[in-house]
Picture (cartoon, rainbow, N blue to C red):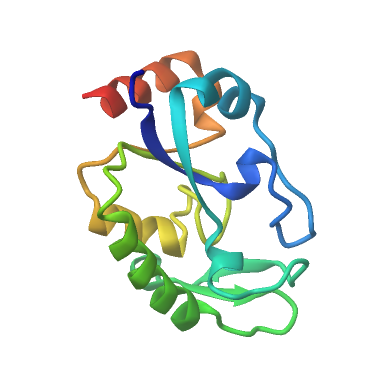
Length: 152
């Protein structure tokens, strides 16, 4: 039996109902096409750091180098809470032989453009690992490049 490749993935992309509105963003490409070859390691920074489902939508604010994650309506800043949790989670992930990370497009915690709080910390901790969002993986050429880096 061959060992499957471990890739960190945003939990909503696997169909978990963890989004701010109680929904998910299940991605069939990840779940059905890549799923048989991958051992997914799920993460939802917002829920995993203790925020409820449903919850108030959030956004990134401030200087791109030092952004904050803030609730849209109330203005509550969740940055410190998320960063404390992320430090612990990243340490746990360091022992799992991860080969990459697929994150949720446009998420203030785990998106790529702009870079979410958790994704930024992940990239800082694991600069050699490929990171891509699910939107860009729909492009066959970008998907192939990502998979080549995962296998390298």
